[in-house]
Length: 458
View 1 (spheres, one colour):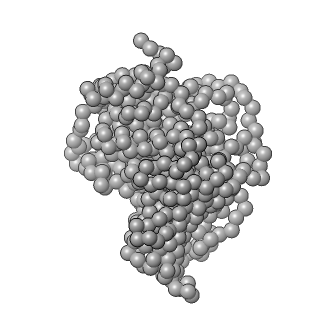
View 2: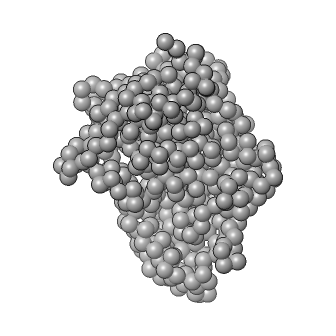
View 3: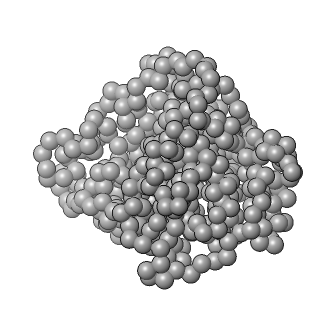
């Protein structure tokens, strides 16, 4: 039997033919795909949470609050983290290798909170294993694997939700409806703000892999590099092999919101400039970034998204990050300025971040205060409701929408890394006349490490 390191990419790609017979092969592990399950109103939905160090803890808390939901299994490559939470799982099901988890046909849904470079591959494997998926933002580390995830969800008839939870907030959904109903007149510009205090990560030396950490599994699809703390817990966000910078970390929430409110999909032109300013450390991704996206409309008009990442000193805009979005006084959301501003012919609307879930409108040249609202939602409950009903139309953040928003993130990063504007063809989802940019969108300029390969045929 072939081991993990012996398995070739050709072996992995043969999985498509086996899937047709109800058999899946994921990175060297072969199992029978589960049959479709129909849920009654009181049936328990069995969820496995993958990734427990940071955001995964929120997943555990969210599912534990929902009726008729069982956290049936946990998975984390760090046994030190896994051991802290394993006692919460019935029957003691805890895994370090997600491929072993997928062999469990009793699991109905997978909730993914692992690093970005694992998101699409793990979600694709879950679809192939017949499981519904909640996958954290961004749903992909590059454009191509996000497109493959959309294809997998469609092929295997899986419900896949991206973790852009602001889409489930009633106040934000109300704000979007006001925009689409024309309360601001003709919308022409959306501005996304990701002004979040980020201190230096310093320089971390190479050191032995900590005891209990399965570093080969953690690295997965990415190139296997010597272990440092700055390539591991959380700071992987700022390394190109595994993360997408703050535009793909915090910023993807606001990117998704900007596109949703403006009513646009793929851009025709993208430009991004910036850099890694102020700190001398191991961070590779920019901590200051200015992006512009142009959208040609069918009626001949254009719309635009401006997006900005700032890592340190900043000002407020439109009351975001202060009491300016509600009638209350005093600071509410700490020192960050995170949200969106929409501009139309009759006024503008500002929204807070996914935690604030507020909006306020100002109308006319005098900026007279208009409607406002504040109400949070439950994105996990929305996912579970749709798993139970088998209604993909009910998902508030379906993977098709998540993929489009993440494509904007990947285009901005590609423009920044190449130092030039990109012309994009929405029909083909390709950069026009720029093979180098398309290669970045295809594999992040780092390829895939067997057997952790996103297949050409899902």
